[in-house]
Image (cartoon, rainbow, N blue to C red; front, side, top):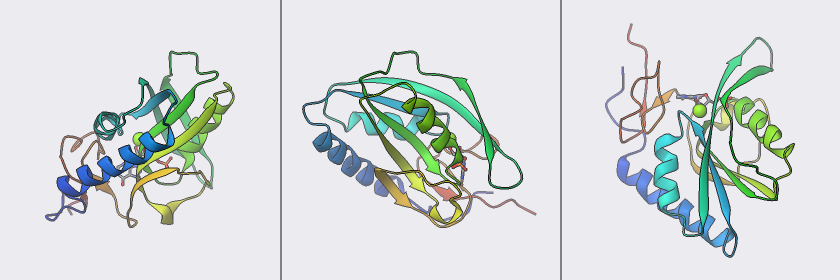
Length: 173
Ligand code: IMP
Ligand code: MG
């Protein structure tokens, strides 16, 4: 079940997304950007964020899923990959949440093999306590405690993505 009180309200989220958009706009001033959303989780954050970035940009997407195995390694499967040639481009990877860091680290290394001009990472949520792989987060929305959260694109069994806020999810017993 979704617990009563939102962890992050729609107002807090939109305020923070505007701040992130301003930071990215400033940092990329005079440059062109390729914003890459990591689906499905980042779809809502991605669409709100790009509206707040005021430099010329193109968008593309990656669909990935990760399967954490025993130990510290996980396997990441890419179901859909970027279609554009990214060599020489300024890539901004946009992710919903960094948990172990396995998914984002894998995607970042994959992109780096394709010679982008630069690569930066924007993550809406950071569950730092759970990190297994160190991945640099250049723009962070919020750091959250070690709880399973849903809403604003994030799911439990593919549900709750449509909630306009972030809530803690607890399995009902
Ligand atoms: P990582 O590879 O462990 O960093 O996992 C990242 C992916 O796991 C995210 O992109 C989410 O899809 C999913 N995930 C991790 N924590 C949560 C959560 O609290 N709620 C919903 N999805 C989560
Ligand atoms: Mg995800």
